Image 1 (cartoon, rainbow, N blue to C red):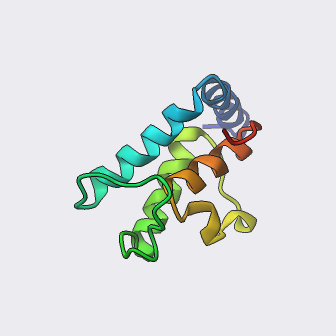
Image 2 (image 1 turned 60 degrees about the horizontal axis):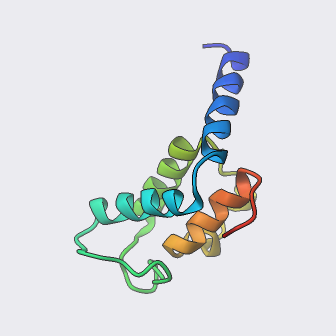
Length: 103
């Protein structure tokens, strides 16, 4: 697939993500985490790393999920634990990357 085609698809996906309600982003992130770990529920502000919910392997899976689901690229400068330490932090990161202020 050509680079131009990939870029077009990313832009289209980004447009769809921009139309999402910020709470839908949170819900998708929360659902991914809960379906990947043995938890019945999760506080959106819970520190996933401090609580031992997330290890380094799962952190990579979370990054991949965020990139694919929200059509964004997580760059080296984005690899800060504060961007992914909770559902709210991850949703705020996604909202910043798609050009919308965090809700």
